[in-house]
Length: 241
Image 1 (cartoon, rainbow, N blue to C red):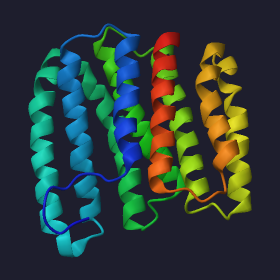
Image 2: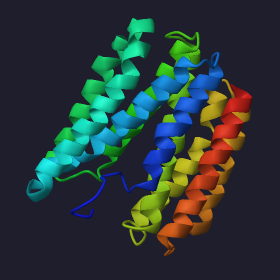
Image 3: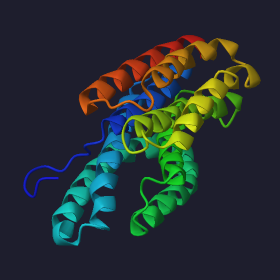
């Protein structure tokens, strides 16, 4: 992170996670203009969380990080206010998000942000955006909402396994076995959840992992692979839901 200038997340996967579940949730219900306000609020909440979490471990740059977190937070509240006025039931998501955020904060303080549990909680948080988008589109606390959250969590956890398998854990034999095994088992999930056609959306992640896990790849190439995977998952999920 540079010492001067705007503060934005540099993890490319975060942008997909904040967008893909939301769009799937929106398209699973009835898209409306209020979705735009909710998405902008969700986006700026994500932008706000990044510098605020970073401030917990970057003492020298804490003031600047908190300032940017506050700026993004105010913008998020501006977009969120009309949505909450129209859909006060969205407050029901707050306790869930607070619990997940608490886990993330704990891992940051423990300097274990790369722990799988931390990744899972972050992905669950992003997937809640899809649940909220589905809710304001006429959905409810129903089976479809669970599927929206579940399929997104399964997909993006696969991304966690893959990305680690070509970077930090590429020489870890046990991790590579787990990464490949996870993606093989992932093909069974759609059948068990009653949407067998969703299996197609998990074929690309499986092929990607079998082909590249354990190999050295440039970050740019990994980013392109992840973008392709996210786009195909988004389109297929919209078609199925």
